[in-house]
Image 1: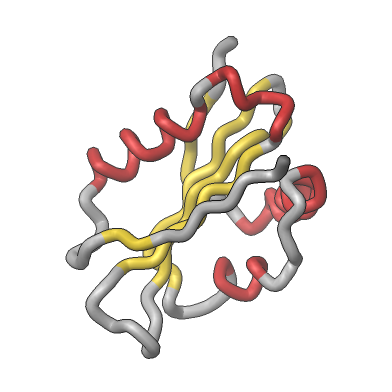
Image 2 (image 1 turned 90 degrees about the vertical axis):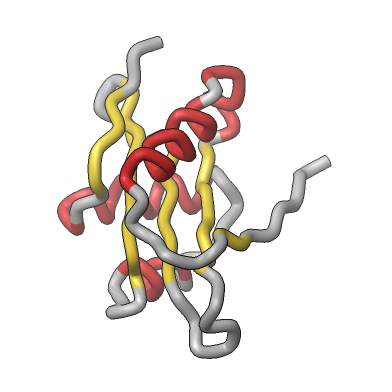
Length: 107
């Protein structure tokens, strides 16, 4: 499966709303993407569908880390797109602090 990774653009917000829904995430994450604390956001499109996304931001609560989140469409889990997004982030080196995230899994 051929997927294209590109910087997130606000014009893709409708696609993002769909991804939030299928990945069981809340729309409050849109606030992060529209905030001045956003460091980067990358989208992965397969067949013109937003299937995965990674974004990072800073926080006053813990200013010595860069928080990040990956959103994934469960249908595309076996495509290893998350790994490709993390590789893209490593190549860019757009952050100066350690990366921090939390993970959970649907049973």
